[in-house]
Image 1 (cartoon, rainbow, N blue to C red):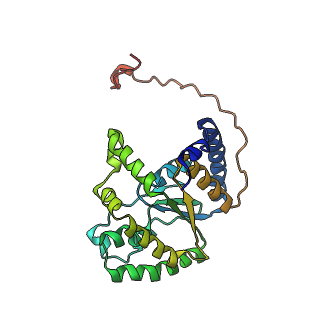
Image 2: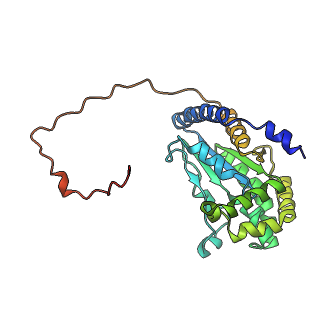
Image 3: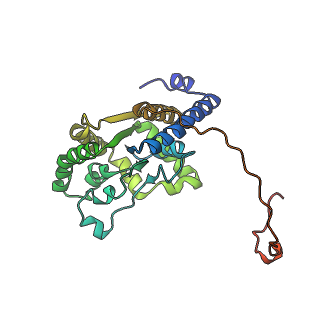
Length: 269
C-alpha cells in the first residue's frame, strides 16, 4: 500500500482536474455525434463494489450528452414476472439501436456478484450464468455491438472511508442501503465471486478493463480517456449557425399575463 502522504501529494489539483475533464467531455460530444452519424451500437458496462465510483464517472460522461442518444440504464430488482424470464431478457430490452451508446449502471453481472454472494440465486443459476454469459456477449459482438466492460476497483480502506462519509452526510445517506452495509461484512466473499467472474468472462471479444478508483478524480479522467481511445471517431461539430430573427405576430394579441399562474419569486431575497 502506498504511503498516504505520498499519494495525497500526487493527487491532481482541482483546477487541473476541471480543465482535463472539460477537454475530455468535449471529446465525448464529438464521439456522440460520430456514433449517431455512423449508426454505431455501443454498450458500456460499469461494475464494481459499492461506493467504488461508478455513478460519479457515469455522471461526468453524460453531463453534456443527449440522453436520447446516450441513456443510462440502472434497473431495479427484478419483478416476479421478470424472475421467470430468461435471465438476460430484461437487459436485452435496453440494448442500443443504431446510433446509440447505452451505459449500464450495473448490468447482467448482478448474478455473478450480489445475487451470488447474498444468496438471491441458486448455485445452479450462478454456474449457468458463468457458462452462458461469454456466449451471450459473443453474440452481442457478432451482431455489431461494441461492448466495453469496466470494473471499478476500490480498496477496503477507501470503501470504508466512503461509507462513513455517507453515514456522516445526511444528503448522502440515501446511497447506503441495507445491502450496501451487508456487503461490507462480506468483503472476501465478493472478492472470490469477482475473481471467479473474471476467470469465465474476461474474454478476448469483450475483455474487462479495471479502473483503479481509490482517487475518484483520477478514476474519472482515466476511464473517460480510455473509453475515447476504444472507438475511433472524427470531429463532426457543425459550423456555427445564424439565429433567425423572430417574426412579428400578424394581428395576434396574446392573453394578459395575469391569466397565468406563476411560481412565487422568493429568490433573490
